Image (cartoon, rainbow, N blue to C red; front, side, top):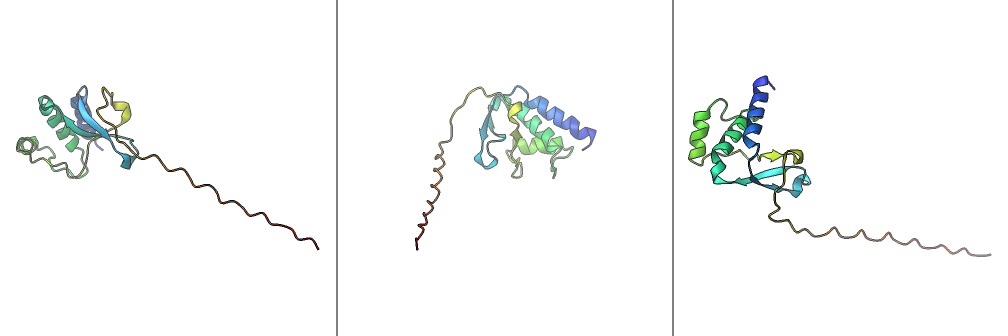
Length: 124
């Protein structure tokens, strides 16, 4: 990573800082990260810039130093994160409210260990 990559990460984090967004926890990663789900339309400009700066350090950048194209795709609702989801470490998230929780089946109890047969000794 270059110092410019670190600057873009910092800019992205600054744009996200203080935003109230809808996040979800997923079982596939053992609920280790919060995944961005949605945000208030009033925050769209900040979200756009936060995601643009995050795009600058994407392993396969499509908008490297091309804010004009990014803004055009964003406005046309043609922006596609390419299958990636934005995630946040739990230490970086303040939960304000839980809107719903996933109902999961409890783990079934482990079957009891098979009983060992007692061997009878024969007397001669």
